[in-house]
Length: 152
Image (cartoon, one colour):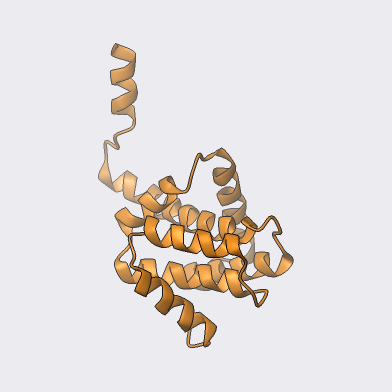
């Protein structure tokens, strides 16, 4: 009983400043994990998909090639150890505004369409991620149209 109480309190951050310092990295890992999951959902993680994810990480987070690759490797590791995508979307929902979450949808659409087509698994996962990020169907479609018509 005492051990379970200790484990509970060990999970609560004591210092909010420390939590926010690690939180930014955790949120980047969570966002990257969604991008990686989208790229590998069709069981074909292509060079094009890897390149677009690295490009997104470098431009949106201002990372060097080396740091972007390290973040992507960490996200892949977290995906392997995860049960589902909820843990990643929870972090994003707790820390990102609606506009930032829509931006994530747009980047996910970039990954989907990097090869010029969308398969049924990518379509399913986009709808699932939209729901996990608490965004509407209209926001999902608007983000898709924005990417398809190149206005990003």
